[in-house]
Length: 153
Image (cartoon, rainbow, N blue to C red):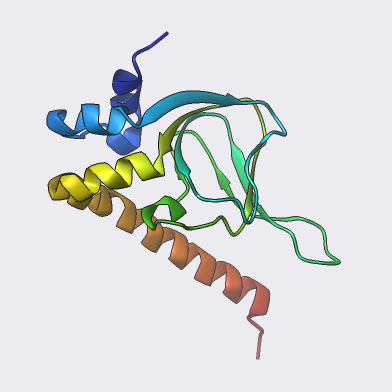
């Protein structure tokens, strides 16, 4: 089996991770496989992991009472899944379901937050990686809301 640290830096998200940070992040990581239809997490579950998708696709879904499940985003190869890990004691506000066989690197949130507390350079590096993704996803959510709630004059 491949070394988790090596697989970690083969992922686009961490491809330029400083050599000194690789064992810190890698020490919190494990490789995981989800079968098609398997849930990575459910709405309300503690956000204890985040995922780097290596292969496959994952649907992010919300369930509204009296309505069908709505997929609001699909995460694919080379994407990052799970921003809630950044804050301790966070919970998922949606479900994540593998649409096909999905290989991922799962990174334990508590482990990584503790390392960021001890090494603020690592924490800053991670924030610089995650904030642009958060901003893109916020912008995407705003555009989706315009599609749903926007109206023509």
